[in-house]
Length: 352
Image (cartoon, rainbow, N blue to C red):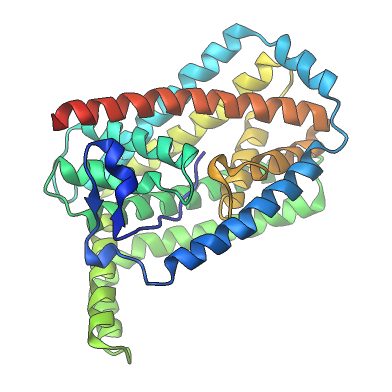
């Protein structure tokens, strides 16, 4: 569950705990106003989280939440834990498909970098985990940081489109849901189909895109940077032109979100609640869309509000939804903290 704008900074001393400081290339450096925008992001994110938490927790019967959590089934929690780990393993394998368009990389280094990146996104502000995985991949290969950054963005965009499409189709198959939810699912499905078509077509019109950029009334350095960004993006999506690679990417994406949805179902069963697979997919879709909002690490407030809003039409009380989402978040933190710390340990051991 994790969402996807990728900020960059020209120099990140905070990565010293990885074993060395990392400098991104000029192409990946942001404009000078970035720190001010980051400050504004926090100014928006903190009050938003507080407001959403207030509406999420309003009316919650905490005794009911405690009863559900304390009486949970450990067997289903272990099952959810195993399914969650599998989803992260598959995510790393899918990211490797994009990276291998430039250089053949072993699976384990990609897994450790991916896990450390998710760890950073969970615990650090401003999606700093993306910088972590970029540094780890580029340090152990000849792949440029700009290309790694582009594959990360491409993966997130494709992931979001696929999730929205899957969740929308699942939502349309459900009965007894509010009309606003039906309309939203229809619009999201149409947008996801359009985005997927553009993602596949873009590599086919590479020359036309270059011609358009060359005619833009921009300064030469700006046009050159735009050329490099576009070329890297198209290179990252070049594998989609290969039917075998494209099919693998689709199958892995479907498997990832089915695993995440199945883990949600298992968590609900552990709490003795009933959650169907289509509703779980709809919930994951709404969380993916909500992640686009300015948020604190872990998207505190947003995930609680989304859970309460989406699950309410499907016979979940506020208390049930809060018990479910808090347990799910705890499971996610356990999984990614364990995998991420292992990934950082492996990286530091390899650096020595």
